[in-house]
Image (cartoon, helix red, strand yellow):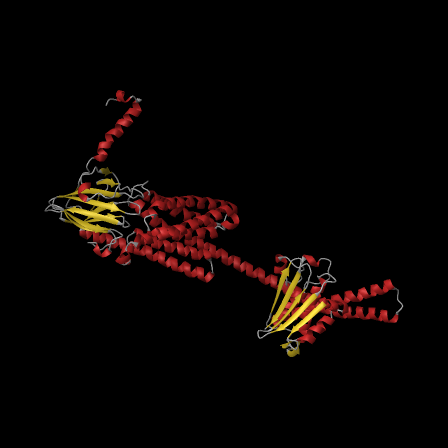
Length: 631
C-alpha cells in the first residue's frame, strides 16, 4: 500500500507503515537459542513465543497449531483466568554438552506443565507448580527446573495456569553452573532471611519490654516480609508438606495483606495521625479493615480479582505517607522524621517497580525481580536507625518527666507540710475564739438579739473551720500511715444513732435509720467509722432540700457490713461523679454551701483503711446514694 493511498500526512504515514511492518515480526517464529561449548548459562529472553488460551481447555496437540506471538522481553500478563502457553527451541553445537537444565520462574506459579521434545520423537511431559507435590519435581529445588537432553535441535512447550501474577522467565544452565548459582543464591537469601528474623525477634522483645505498640507492629511488618519473600523465592514449597502445597501461594498473599495491616498501624501510631490528621487516620483504619477482610480470599481463586485493587491501595498509601512525613518534618524539624522519610522512600520505589512487574506494566528482569527484596532490607536497616533515634528521644523525655515529677512531688510535699503545720497552729486560736464567744454569751445573758446572732455565727464559723482542720490533719495522718485503727467489736445501731445525734435535733428528725439485723455488731474503729458516717450524713443534709427525708440503712451479711445513705437532693452528673473524692473538689450543686471538699475524700480513706470500698451512685434530679462496704 502506498503512502498516498493511506491518505495521511507524511510523518503519520511513515509511523503507521513502521508499525504495520513490525506486526509480522511479532508473529514471526523466534530464533533458536544456540548452545555452544562456551555456554554455561543462557537466558531465553527474546526467544519465548506466547499464546493465550481464553477457554483454558485446549490440549497440547491443539495448541501446537496455535498462532504464537514472539515476546521480545520477559513481560508478564498480569492477573487473569486465561491459560498461557509458551514455546522455544534449543540448538546445540557439536562441541557443546548434551545435558542441560531448564529453570523456569516465577516460583509462585500454581500449575506449570512442560513438554520437552525427545530425540526419538514425541514429547516428555513434566507436571510442576506451586499447587503440586514438591516431591514430584524432577529436580528438587526451590525453582521449577527440569533436565533437558539436547541432541541437536529440541523444542520445548510450557503451559501456565495460576491465580498469582502470570510472569514467566526461563534460563538454560549447564548442571554444574546451575548448582553453583543456586548454592550462592541460597547463601545470600539465607543471610537476608536470617537478618529479617533477628530484626523481628529484636523488635518483638523490645516492644514487649517497653510496652510499645509501634515496636510490636514493626516486628509484625518485618515478619510479614519474611513470609512474603519466602513464597516469592520458592522456599515455602520446600518447607511445607506436599499435602497442603496449595497453601504456599496463600501464605505469600497472607504475608502481603498482613504486612500492609502492620505497616499501616505502625505509621498511624508513629505519625500520631489520630491527633494531627484525623481524616487520614480514619482512611488508614479503613485500609486496615479492607486488608483484613481480604484475608479469607487469599486461599481462593477470587484473589486474582481483588489483587489489582489491593495493589492500588498500596500505591495510594505509598504516596500519602511521604507527604505526611514532609508536612510533619516542616512543622517539627525532628531528625528522625527525615530518617523515616528516607526509610519509606526506598521500599516505596522498590514496591512500585515490583507492582508494575506484577501488573505487566514493566518487564521482568534481574532489577524488577529483586529490587523490592533488596529495598526491604535497606528499609529495615534505615528504619532501625530512625527507631533508635526515637528510643533515645523517649529516654530523654522520660528522664525529663521523672525530674519534673520529682520536683513537683517535693514541692507538693513541702506545701502539704506547710499547710499541715499551719492547720495545726490554727487549733489553739480557734478554740480560744470559741471559748471567748461562749464566755460573752454566759456573762451577758440579756444580750440583744442581733448581737447574740452574730455571736452564734462566730462560734459556728469557728466550729466549721475547726472541723476542716481536724479533717485535713486526720486525712494527712491516714495518707502517711500515722493514724492506726483501734478496732473493737461494736454494736452498729448505737454507733450510727450517735452519728445522727451529732447532726442536731432538727436534722435527726429527717433521718430514718434501719439496721439488719437489729443487734448487728462488727469489728471496726468506732471513732473513725462514726466520723465517716457523720460526714456522709452531713453531706446528705447539706445538699438536699430542708424538709426532704434521708435514709441510712445498715445491713450485716456473711460478706461484710454495708452502710448506705440515700438523699433526695439534686444529684450529680457523670462528670462530677467521676471526680468525687478528689481533695478539695466540690460539685456545681455545692455553690453557696459550706464545705471544704475533704469530707468524702476523708471518708474514703477511713473505709480503705478498714479494707473496704466506698461507692456512690448519682440520680440526677433525684438525689445520691452512697454506700460504704467493710469486708
